[in-house]
Amino acid sequence: MNHLHSTSKSALVFTFSALSLWSSACSASDSATQPATNVDAPENSTTEALEPDAPDVLVANEAGQGASAPAASCSTQELEQKLREIIAGVDARMPTTPGYLLALRSDDGRIDVAVASPGLDPGASYRVASIGKTFTAAGVLRLVEQGRLDLDASVDRVAPAPLPELLRSGGYDPRRITVRQLLQHDGGLRDYAESQEYFQAVLSDPGHHWTREEQVQLAMRDGQPLSEPGAEYHYSDTGYVLLGAIIEQATGSGLGPALRELLKLDELGLTSTWLETQEPAPPGVAAHAPQLLEGADLFSYDASIDAYGGGGYVSTARELVSFYRALLTGRVFDQPATLALMQTVPDVNVESHYAMGIEQVVGDCWGHDGFWGTEAVYCPQQGLGLAVAGMSVESLNYLVGDIVGPVLREAAACAAAGVEP
Image (cartoon, rainbow, N blue to C red; front, side):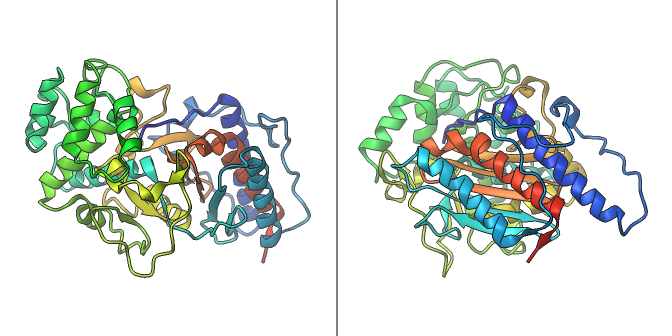
């Protein structure tokens, strides 16, 4: 559903500093056993515009807490305890919600932990919300690299009926809105998920099964277009609902099965990741976490509220780390240029750092968050992935500054010390 990500500059400085220490630790470890090698930054790197001046040690976070100094050594048990303390600190500020769960893993295997608030299973499945946009965008780009879809094709040409006509009814010209603009949220579309009419309808009838046409119609009733196509960034679930329909039109398959094949989910071993309403739950999948919406079990709301391209996936923290790692290390796309395209931030999106279904969190770290209080981040240069799920919408307010940043700080300090079993 709608996008509430609000990362402050100081939180980004804090996070990047943690990653700088992580990189330094890894480099120091490698240089002890390998000859020095000059490695040029990737040509498509956009980190310069985002990266603050990073000190050699971690800066304080927004609450004034300094970085953990590297100890003589660091055990997995000690790291897990520190992560539990981070979660407990946030839980104390949100006593009426069930808490958080997270998974943290490094590519070299030295760090591989999963922790949760008391009473929660860190391996539980959960609705990931807008993190699903990364799946949808990657699916579209797979079709592009296969020559089955033109990135600059108009919605009028590639979206199935009656969607182009619905857009016209709201004052849009689907001949001028492209697939590329939908991916980048700069098609000028209103977001049905941000309309009060939609939110109240969801709360008043949790069991209603929504169609994508109903959701697009709601966006049309919400007002006139927000901008000319390509002129401004406006986050829009409506655009990703259209993309889901475009994937189905291009493949002749339902969205869930189409994305499973396009993204190689089975090949990647993601056995607990599926698109609700589009695919059956996998056998033996872990019980779902107790996510809440307005105090009620989120899973009591029909999955169609967020199922047609803007979200809809259920997964686990560990599997989200695995997916983002596979995506950002080139295992999903056939061509490196496709990943570079996905990570290209257009000029109108510079302030949001949003590219195509993925946003630059800081430095080389990319990810996405979700309305239910979820976040997934992977940092290729550091080889470090993190996925977090809060159990309520309010959880999103604490993700970056209070959980993601501090967790990366502890991971960096632990790596600098040398992780022991």
